Image (cartoon, rainbow, N blue to C red; front, side, top):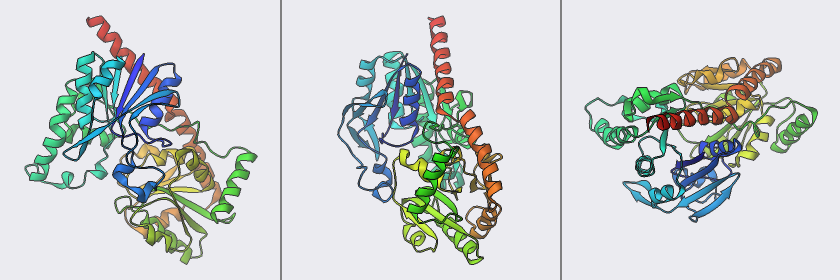
Length: 399
């Protein structure tokens, strides 16, 4: 089967879906191509997070990546959004059986739908937009200008794409609701398909060698053996609010508790975090280097918005603490707690429940086992292939 995955951006050395789903589909023996723009994730988030090592724009061309082929196309901005120049022609030349678009209502999703019509390929889309990042749209009046703009930008193109698409894979329940209510995707075409974990990279400490590596890295990061290290990775933005964790840690330290913080990434809240005693800021690192840092920590904390990093940290055996507004509660079933979002006092009390090592290790093992069994890209890619084959078989019966 030849599969083309279309993504607005592609950033090498990252753990995004457009990096990992193609790799695991190819491991199953399929001919996989990723068609993307010449933009990387730093185009949107800037060097505050990724640093100069990941420039926002790179050279177009065709490149081997892992065991699939990456096609980077030049882009043009249309209304502030990238249009992939030549996408339909490139997909036509590739003659895929399946087109998997990493969106449901964007410009590249519209291009993917057009390419599916031209080539006869079966189109599948995705919905990764959480309710927590919809902002003013969710709170606006049904007949407001904000809602009208949202309908024109999201619902109208979403309906057009969905008329061609077979299935839209939503990563969580709230992503599915956003897809249906704001992106024009019919509920009959939405399937919940969680983000996967690269379990070849993210795994728990399970032997003496891994334990030595853990303790060595903790020392290099400046943490003592008995410190309880809480790790956060991602953007240091008000929307993500890692500073809430720093404030909670400060409260715990004032009570003589051995809690410390490891913050990986960058952004506007960096200075406040750096100035908080017991908090260590580390620059962004590629995915392969992130796993050892999770294994060197004791608790994973994401104070606000959902993050795929939660799953990766859980796979490394860390219990998780997340916002009480997160809808994907299956991520912390038996291996984590939620706290009242934005309240550092509430967060400090929840963290204190994880002070005992035995509790952390027991919960961490529950999470690592469940993620390996249910969230591994090995399983998700196999399920996706089953869907693709079913669609192709149904097409063949109807021809």
